[in-house]
Length: 219
Image (cartoon, rainbow, N blue to C red; front, side, top):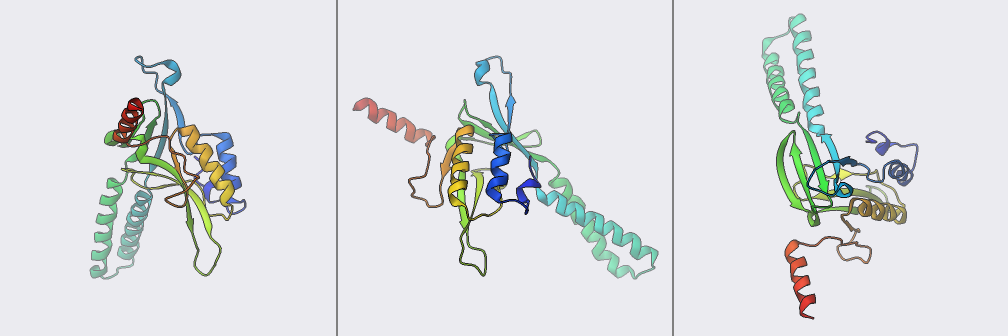
């Protein structure tokens, strides 16, 4: 899924992302055929993104470090009072590692116009597609006047924001790539500012869409 290529320092962020999207237009999602019998074969495709949260690795590292410290400290005959902290860290690290062990999976269904988030095999949330989007973000790193830009996928109920690339100054290229990805996934695209001509709105709140339809019928 390009975990390491996303942070490659030897290439411009936009070039790296463009290469990933050329190889997989739905990156970082994977196109999956569901094969559901009650659906048209041409419409039985969903987009899936899976990831184990980084906190699992952080707490796993804490657990391993605690075990190593206890072994070394015990072999050196160190004072037991210091072992209390190591044992406490071991307990916390082990418990939290188990808590964050499950892989989170985001399933985007463009036909049903909804997305679902799973923790392991447990469904956490299902939302309408107007709540998930690709967005162009900006930031000014400390000590510099140059604005940097990056792309994300975010939405209500997602366990964490999906960062698509590292920062770059090439806003125009990232905007184009954001448009392309949002088009392939069939979701909304939002630009940097809340009000922008570059927004691409494919989905509105179901109530809004229903109201718009009623108004058009009345006209």
